[in-house]
Amino acid sequence: MAHVGEPGSTRRVRYLLALYIAEHRAGTPISPGRIAEMLDRSPAATTEMLQRLAADGLVAREPYEGVTLTDTGRERASDLHETYVALSWFFRDVLDLDAHEREAMEMAGLISPEVAERLAHLLFEDLDVDAEGRPDGLGVSPSRAE
Image (cartoon, rainbow, N blue to C red; front, side, top):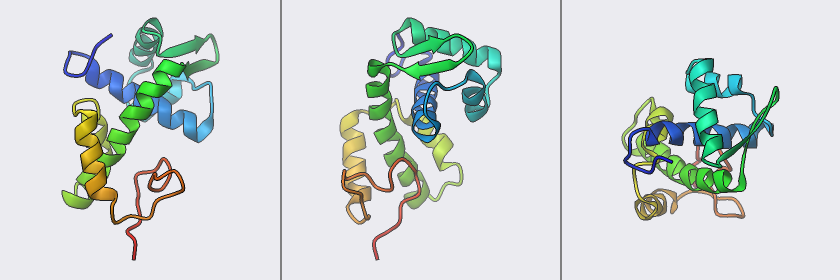
């Protein structure tokens, strides 16, 4: 399995994040076509990556149905999602980037959890958060506290 900083790790991160988000929005299993659409990838490229993720134990493939994150895959994707959200908000609120979500997805696997946690602390200290301490659920559109 590719680790952070290795060739292919950024692509794996994008797929894990897309699967995690799709799973929370629509449930499982998730069709390869939906993931291909989310990531603007060809069906063949998506199927190939999903096969790699399955070989690494991160997803379970269900023929003619789709894929589901395994517990290991979900845990990894959850950690990546926290980083993705922090980066996305930073890119949007601080750098005022229009493509904040795309940029965050590209970089989510490239920074350490410690850096992501510190960034989140700086960004979220003035935000309304839900009972679990997560701003705005899964979305990346926080509302500043007034």
